[in-house]
Image (cartoon, rainbow, N blue to C red; front, side, top):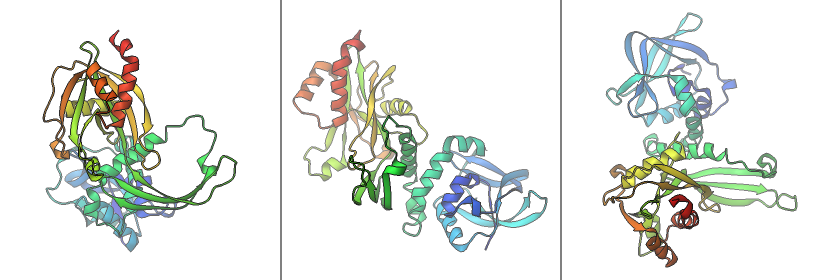
Length: 371
């Protein structure tokens, strides 16, 4: 059973536990150093790389006795990012030297971008990556690592959405640790979205536990939807884009007029996502945001949660080529007088539910915003 040295994100014990598939209490960990090497941030990525550097001291942890299955799990987790194992001599905390295997990046694959800090990474990304690893490792042995890598960003987005969801506590006196019993939980499918299935019981209104229910859910990240409004000109801006799900349900008009929408990126505040998406899709800078609320878009079938906003700004220009080409977006926008916009709402021209919600909210608060 080989010994390994970890210099990067796997020094974060909660992440290491999920990748290895066992508790840290059963893992022998000790601090170690790989001499004449340094750890660097990777340009445009959230993970680090290591490379030789005379006089450098790469800090890390030494983990002896990695089993064959654990080695396969580590190779699966790291393999999609083109990291391979090499033998190196590391210096242990007691002053002795030991041989260990170290994950090194493929030569020339990544561009170094300054020193990397584990503390800074844990503060920003530790919880997200540890939670994302639960979903990623659930597909170990089922999906090859390079295929999984294509879903990594979406999985991290869902992990961040879970962390945000844990903050949505109101005054409900029920306790899911007592009032929900999970019998089986499986992850059935992963891509841009995920699909999970669960067998569970929940406490009923009469106080008894109900029957075991089998349910499935489309797993999504959190999203923002914002309707730009110009209170001086009394106009709104809406965008149009092709929506494959609308096409798949046989709707003959899959080009949807909508409010601006987008996913909340991992580690991003919803308000940051609003400003980013409005600039990407419409080229508009907002001066202020009105938080309309937040809600699950379809609580019976999906985890999708939407943060709703009306954004205030000067609406003077439209675009016919908005969005990101890297995401396959082809977006055009139009500016409508508010009364014309509401006439279209009343005539049921629009099919986008979040935009209808924002339209009704704006109709109620328009006088205040104009004043």
